[in-house]
Length: 335
Image 1: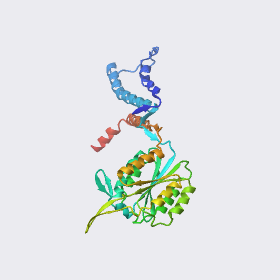
Image 2 (image 1 turned 90 degrees about the vertical axis):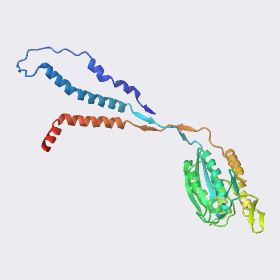
Image 3 (image 1 turned 30 degrees about the vertical axis):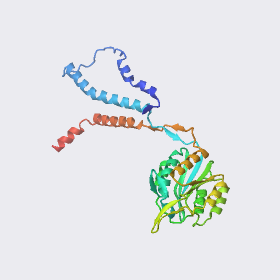
Image 4 (image 1 turned 135 degrees about the horizontal axis):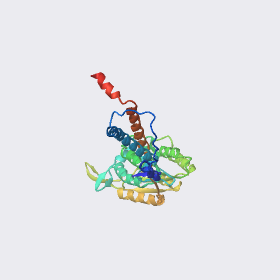
């Protein structure tokens, strides 16, 4: 909607009419010292004067109207925008190793791989984190910063949705992911620093071990919530029939539990999409979302539009008055 910073200035709009209708002082008539012969009748002269006045009155009225509107400071009042008031930083580290392609997860009645389930459920969690600065790390052979710390949850979710298996290798560098998160947390920001670590395996790559990365996290006062992904039982077809296997045999729960407990966090096990949703709901309780959100409505100044139009009208009006025969002579020369 459009608002005015100084709406009382609009009261000046009828000022020219008030001045026009004020009683005029009568001028004393004196005898003329020189008598000029009148070649045209008074009615003809007055009609010509009136014809010349009409465009002038219209242009000047428009210029006055536009000038007053510009002076009253018109502004466009935008939609309400939430202002984050909670000083929390949350880094999300997602495992893209080869084992994340194992199809042992169910999502809305369909069997999907671990990464697809993670994208669906984690995306809802990201949307709920209003007021948090979120970052996204993808790791496999190495750890990469996919999205730096930002309040733009939509971009973080989009970057997560666009991640694919094999993008950063096939192994699992848990230590590098934690070390990169520690490095990327804003040292100047006084906030609750939280790392959400999601993996389905054990550390098999990287330059830094999980134990070394843990020391860095403890020194920087970073809380780690680790989530182990994978079902306990999976049916596998073979030449000899169907057999039951444990697809999460390589999951290093001991290390993940140690990482969480020694930083004041907690370890969770996600065996299906329902379990993952419950974990995120519990995380919302452990790291509550700020409820008392402040809002602002952005203002965009619009005064330059009527002001520019008034100046343009004035320019063309002065051009026509000072050079009334420009168009006429131009067309005569062409003929």
